[in-house]
Length: 67
Image 1 (cartoon, rainbow, N blue to C red):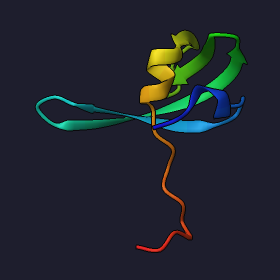
Image 2 (cartoon, rainbow, N blue to C red; image 1 turned 90 degrees about the vertical axis):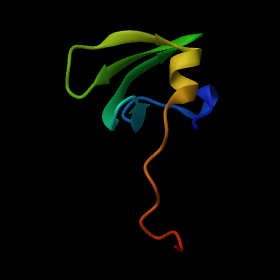
Image 3 (tube, rainbow, N blue to C red; image 1 turned 90 degrees about the horizontal axis):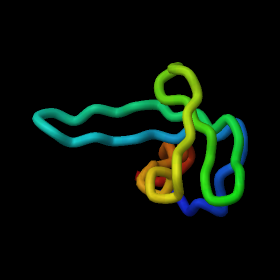
Image 4 (cartoon, rainbow, N blue to C red; image 1 turned 180 degrees about the horizontal axis):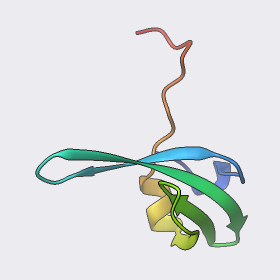
């Protein structure tokens, strides 16, 4: 999970939705404003996302991290 205070424009995060099957959406941070952020889901037009949505997102795993 991502802390709201750590996001910055240009970050690429991921949203994991689990319903009948798992879906992963790429989320690009366009701008960070107090209390919310402007994000783009999977290349779609930017939209406003609040703190609750941002804190649900995940960062990609580090490539150099041990297994």
